[in-house]
Image: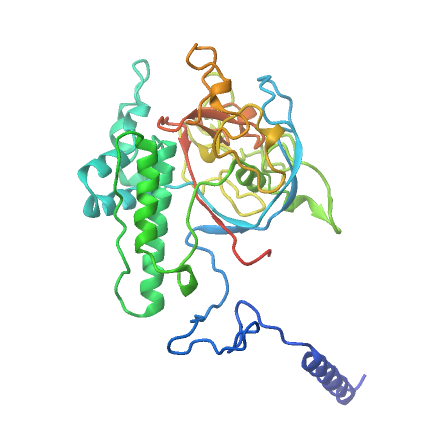
Length: 422
């Protein structure tokens, strides 16, 4: 085939493409809304009219990974060895969202502490401090972790622990204000931060409520409007369903249309916790957990997972969504209130348990010491450095009071994926 003929054929193809594009109807979009309203015909951006700011499309905030939503089987797929029967399988759909690719690390939390130390009261700063005594054990020599784990530079990119569910929510509210103030400063070219990021408290009746609601109301009052297109939606804790969907990462098992090659017990394929791929990393542990009683890391020279306690937030392979440590290292708080029968009443679209709706705490005999269920029990998931492999499965779930903290629980944030499905 001659070069002249090839060029001629390419020219015809380009002309056909151009003609096809010209014939397409150009409807307004969020990015290109046009100059006038298609509903009223009134021009946008007049001096006293409706202002439509320039918008280049949704963007991911710092450290966030896009998680495309879809249908999946929520619930425990492995044998229920704890006989809890509180996460039965059911099909649900999850909207697209963003999630932190890593757990929040000590350096991130120290940045937060420094910001509120400057801008907020001593009371707020004190309540934000992680409980470093979670490492203390009268029968274990963990003294160095108590004094150094949070602040010593070598631990900068280790996951923050000793943080309660309430403190994690406070961090998310502060982060929203900090990120958006910086984005707005860069976007409007003023070089000035818009609004403050102080956290305040209004009442001593409910410390959890005043922590979260006080922080969110202050941030909401000071940040620029969403219509500006210069800021992001709120950072928050992921729902339990979002967390489980992101951890399983079934996008990596899909082929041809809506078919999936397999389900997943862990955030990776197979029933093994070791890397099956041939090569230098074959046989290495895929997460940081406790193999058995007293075995936190194997033997010197042949450490099975490389960590006696926690490990750095990028230490193990990411799952198919690009998320690190969705199994092991530390458990992670999610938004949901714990109920053993949530699977019976939750919606099958973006399920969440915010409170005791349809399953009130009064139905459980906590006062008579026959139950511990109330609206302050929050779910955590993922397994930790101190847990056996059973708890690495995304379908397992446990709970703890929202004001409590341990050396095995951290968190990461999520954000709604607005205006997009892909």
